[in-house]
Each structure stands twice: as C-alpha cells, then as structure tokens.
Length: 185
Image 1: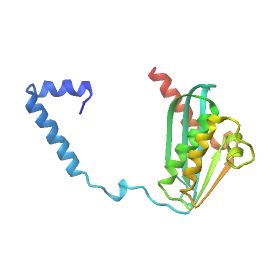
Image 2: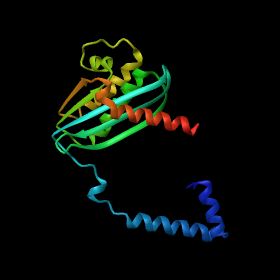
Image 3: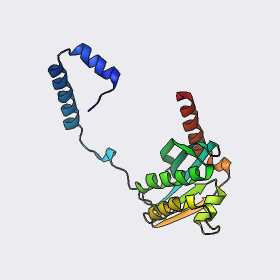
Image 4: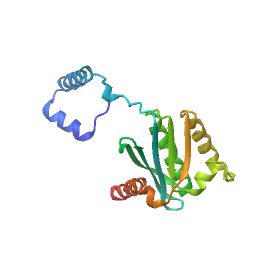
C-alpha cells in the first residue's frame, strides 16, 4: 500500500527504523479495521414511497469542461436525502445532462423508492426518454441504454421537464464542481 508522501515523511521522522514503522502502520490499520462495526447507519435506508430526483449537467464550452449535479429529495419529510456534484471531463452539454441522470439514478436506487420522479431542465433529454423525440445522435445510444437498464430498478419512474429556476440546487452543484476544478488548476 502506498501512503501519501507527506504521511510517509512524518512516519519516517517518528520511526526511523523501517521494521518499526511498518509494524506501527499494521497495528493502526488492524485496530481501525477491527473496531469498525457495520451499523444500520452505514447501510442505505430503504425509503419506499415517492422521491424526487433533480439532475443537471453542464459544460463550459460545448464541448468543454463538464460536470453533473444531483439532488434526491423526500417530499414527505421535506428533506434532501443526498446531494452530489462532480466534474466529468470534457463533454457536451447534452452528454453531461444524460450523465447527471445516470448518476442520480444510481444514487436513488439505493433508497428503493416505489415512484421516482426525475426533474431535468433539458427538454431534449426528457422528450427523448419519453419517446417524444427520436434519438439521432449515436453518442446518446449507450447512455440511453444505461438509463433504460437503471429504470428497471424502479417500480415506477417518470421524467419531467422543469424550468432551470426550479432546478437551481442541482445547477448550483454543477457550477460548484466546475468552479472547484478551475481553482485547482
């Protein structure tokens, strides 16, 4: 196992002898692994009922650096169950929208909702998934196939177009991920 350089340097300062250092690392890891017990808090909670998934994908440039944002919401408890945002490399806006939905579906699957309502601010993606528009771009085909595979995890699922203002939280996650990436450069 490789440790970060800063940690390796610190351990070398504390334990100049290699055997002593290795024994310490093994002891700490064994203790950590044996003391962590899997609890109910470590397992996803099966919610059932209806959940709302808000997803957004975007790129700065088209194609350009892209990111996805997902918000899973429980309307009965009026709480956000999970938020997620991440950069996905150089993609088009439409690919980012599809990737955001795929990521969101994977997150929602952990909560086992009976009905999942997916809110997207991409009219193109919603109409393609609902069969109102034909899929002309071959690059969308594997993404749609993955979405169709994930759809089978839900007893009932629907895709709804919403205005960007009603998808602000997912949009914020996209922009945060892109801003964070920009700062790291």
